[in-house]
Each structure stands twice: as structure tokens, then as C-alpha cells.
Image (cartoon, rainbow over all chains, first blue to last red; front, side, top):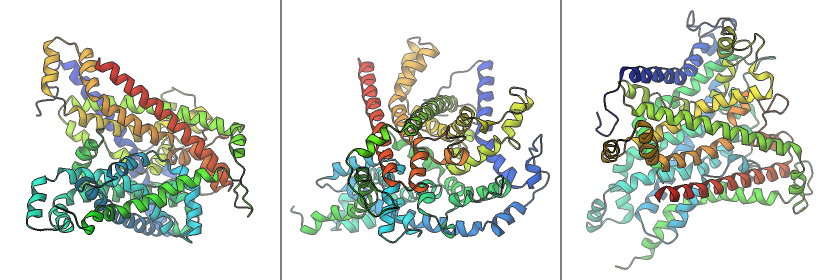
Length: 282
Length: 296
């Protein structure tokens, strides 16, 4: 047990209250998620049963089949994967070079650039919509996936650079000096000394970017109008019958969308809980 | 040691790709948007005359924009209030270090990982008039009458969307504040205890004072996100019923991509951005005054 935590002995009443609140918190966090999974296994009529069935009677996969056969989720999935992976790879690599340069090399203007990164965090996406739309038509990218990838890279770069800077900063100066004495050039130092040490940080930053881009909706729904080019989040909005949403397939697809993000998150949870939290210090 | 030319331009070459991307797809659109607001720009006609401040004059007389601004205000304030309150509360709950707090901690980020569009849909389903489990719970406990429906009027629709958004936003506060709390120096806590501070005083003068900087940063970030939030509102209410939940983001997006009046959308987004900046400046000033006052 860490010594700096509250660890004086508590009266029984307080303990009970703490556990009660913790259970409420756990329930509130998990229930909506459970409900997505639960609904995805129900037949359409069962979704409307009152009182609701809290445990599905049987695992019915027809919603998943419907999502694939009727709504062509695999198509949206492919688009989303393409957009997200391209964005993550480009953002993380470009961001890594910039983070190295900003933290480890002295040059004129580096302070101004860092401040610029902070300022861009305030830009609302909705302000960028119209100009991005015009830019895309001008560059003949309208309704192509590039029209998403390029703005995504630009939007994700500032955070990616800020997060990665934290890792580059942590590398001991002595290692760099030693390599310099051995006659390594700056690029060799970056490649042989820094990259191996900061790889975990680079990967974790990539995961962060993945989660952000994977769920993007505003730009994707505004710049893409052709259904075959829709990403998953935009594809979800097409799950409509004549009168109501097709809740079963919608929830089945939600499960499909949530899985990649949850898996990646699970693999890098330590990072999120320690590093992302540590980076907002100011 | 003199640097060679290659050595001295290398730092710039390394940052160049990143800042070129940011320049072309972030800074340029930002400025272009400002420029567009001074033209009469619509996709329907090829003539796009310069009109000066006409768009702004027109928008300032536009009732639906001001209604959207006030709705965005309500949306932001209520969301922030609950997200901070619940988020900080949960951070202290985790910090009380009960058995199983690590278990709870590993789930805390789920709402934040789940794509916001899905959050919107699952809350719509749970609050659905016929199939909603929350609606059912409220009805069967007789807290509301049997025809109760969340999406029948503006206030309740807003409440529904705010609930979904708070669910999504509060873990961010919890995690940030909890991480900060874990670094509190033991001697500070011990010293205050020796001086006989009661729990309330401990909370106010020791813990809250210690986390205030992180809290301000979180409020700042969360304010920007909430003010510009789009996904949840779009999915849950789509601005309805009868435009009663149309916030600025929804209004601007619709103006641009359903009505194609691009200069209107640009003008509105400049106004929304200006309002946001003004609030940020006021907030930052207040925060620094508060800090100076506390240091004395």
C-alpha cells in the first residue's frame, strides 16, 4: 500500500458508504456497455419486451448476420481501418520526428512552435468544416478517404507531439553525450539511441491516436456523402428502418466498433492511467 | 564547435512535415474560414462578392443563432457542473484506497474509450419511449407518469443528452484528479493532521489546494470539448424536437451541409469561436486571480 494514501482506520459506517458508492459507480460505468452487448443478442421483438430482459434468453447472432448481410458493415469496417491505420502511422512517425527535434535540439523558434501546438488544441472542428470541404473539392479528394486522412493527421499531430515529447524528455542526457563522443550524427543518435528507448511511448501514443480517430464522426459525416465510402461511425447512422432504428443490428455493430478500441486500450492501460494523466500538468 | 549547414537546418527539417500538415489542414482552414465570413459565398451561384461585415450584421439579428448560443451555454454549464462534481467525487472515492479500488480503476476509462456516437445510441435506446430500460425503471417506480417520454419535449431531451455526455466526460476528471492525488506529499497531510484539521478542512485546504492546478487544466479542456460537442446531440436528438436542442455545432453543420449556405456557416462558426475564446480569457484571468489570492 502506498504510504501517501489515506489509510487511517475508518469507522464501519464510512467503509460501508465507500463500498456502496463504489458499487454504484461500477454499475453506472458498466451498465450501458453491458446493455449494448445484451441488446445485440436479442431478437427485435425481445428488445421491446416490458419489463426488459436483463439477461438474454439465448445468444442470438441474427443481428450480427443482419449487420453484415444487409448493412454491409464489413465495408464500413474496411474504410475505418484504412483511414485510422494510415492516420495513426503517419501521425505517430511525423510527430515523433517533431517531438525529438523540439525536445532535444536547440533551434530558433522552437518555443513559438510549442506554443502554437498548445493553441491549436482550442480550434473547434466545426470551424474547420467549410474550409476543409472547399479544400477537398479543390484538391479533387471529395468523397475519397484521403479527404479524411489528411485533416485527421493535422488534427491529431499536436497531441501526438505533446505526448511523445514527454518520452523524449525522459531519456538521460548522458546517453546522448556518449553517442556524440563516439561520433554519431544527430540522425544516428535518434535512430540508435532514442528510438529503442522511446518505442513504448511511441506505441502508446499511437494507441491514443487510434482511439481518437476510430470514433471521429463530425468530419467523416460532413465530407463523405457516398455510402460505400462511409466509416463505421457514419455507417451506424444508416441503420434505420422506416419508423425506428434497427436497434439490434445497431448494437451488434456497436460491439464490432468497440472491440478494436477496447483491445488496444487494454494492452496499453498502464500508459493511459499513468502517462496521459501525468501529461496534463501545466 | 561550429555547426555545419546540415546540422543547423536538421532541426527544421525534422519539424517541417508536422508543421506543414498543421499549417495546410489546420491554420490555413482557420484563416480561410475567417475570410469566407466576409463574402457572400454559396455553392448555388458562381458570383461570390465581398460583403464586408454584412454577414455578421445579418447573423446578429438572427434569432435562431442566439437561441443556439444560449442552448450551448446551458448545455456546457450543466455538463461541466455534473462532470466536475461526479468526476472529482469519484477521484476521492478511488483515493480512499479501499479493497478493490484497483479493480474499479481498470474500468473507469470505458466510457471514454467507447466512441461517442455509440454512447449517443445506447443512451437513446435506454431512454427510448417504448424499449428504454431507464424509462421503464422511472415508470415502474412511479416517479413519472405512464406516458412519460424523454424525447417529447426540449428540456427532457436536453436532460437525456446531458446524462449521456456526463457519463462520457466524468472519467476524465476522475483519472486526472486521482493521478494528481496520488502524488500528494505525506508530510503535508501529516502536518495538517497534527495541527488538528478536521476532514472538511483537510479536504478544502490540503487536498483541494493541491489539485487545483490540474483541476483548472481539466476544466479548461473539458470546456472546449463540451462547448464544441456534436456527436451525442446529433445522434440523440438531432437538434429536435422542434429545434429545442440545437446547439451551435449542430446549427453550423446543418447550415453548411444541408442548406449549403457556406458564408452563413462560416460567420456563425467565427462568432462561436469568438464567444469561446472570450470565455476562456475570462476563465484564465479568474483562475490566475484566484491563485494569487490563495498564495497570500
